[in-house]
Length: 541
Picture (cartoon, rainbow, N blue to C red):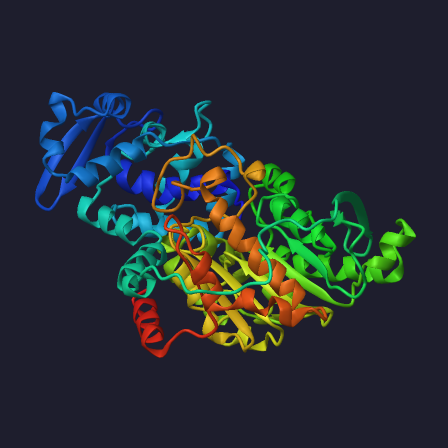
């Protein structure tokens, strides 16, 4: 999911920077903290804000902070330094909008549990005021805007909140340790008819399209990847992108499938693409419903004979579709393939647990504002689905994915902070009916499967519990090759050549191509002994 970094840096700022950095203040109504009081157990240390600034700038604890430094472990000291250096480029309106949502209120409530500020009104006011700083929202700016004479911080409670951030990700890492024996290297002797990671012989062209849905007031842009070998006896592949991204984010995959004779239609959702998210902070809850409807509308238009070259139009089969989605698009693909949104438990968990959620789970929480408890957006023209790093741990409840009746493949990576593997992919897999496949890669991150040309600059993004430390580009060519193999094989399952491609959807094949850099495994069912382990970890969440 190419998520809106602006919004989630704000969430990060609320849950980390303030928890670890907004430490009590002696203030005036106009300009607050010149002094901060840090309390740990019965001990307390008074710290000048100027000294905090110096610590943030140099990373060296000033002499006046020597007592403060003894209260923290080296890891806690690193976390504080990281928090003090976060600047969020957000305007006042953006901050105010988020804080007025249920998620914002839940996060503020979590932070206020370590302060003497019930309800977090002073926290909220200081955040909004500090967002007016040209340098952006920051911990130090917050201290200067805090309106009350004193803010008490229980440092142990603050670090307890920090320890719960993105719990699903850390549980995934623990789970992978338990799974180490299952990942021992083996290279079975597998005979394959050809290498599915290599491009086909056909030359690919990209045809821009535009669809006008006047009834919903949506303009849907799309790119059709096409070659002369595309035929109506093959499925049309439809791609749905991640939150805050663009339709071409899997360009390499689109070209690969088109070169093998599969039309690939990459469409862009106007209410959740990069243009929209860069312009507006809040993703509207209705967008979760509109995204599958975008796909159905485009298929209707193609079936009705949208204006394009007659040869190209005749080569496409909108009645036989493989839906592929990445990140938030993964949940869109699962929904249009038959998955039912079940929002009862989502509402309760988002109300009580948002402080410890991953970014992907926070995104799912916007569904709590939808009026109904259940939504099914199934389109029977979708005959198979692939969900890459889907964010799906909350949306479908306990049984919503059991309503998916088409072949489905879930792709997961072990070091994904945005959509942690254990909760958002492994945990949901048992709901799906066979035929189904789970492909897991050790060491990959959320952006590893994306086309490097469409990954935003990551150099200024800090490594935090919620995001950062992404691995992508040339380094993750192995992961993109895995994706080329299983997507081609899945598409071929909807053709007369299905049996020829079955080998590429077997555990033996993926063990044979697994690399030391990124070990990969495929399973069709999670073994009972591992499922027990999965459930044990998820119960702790």
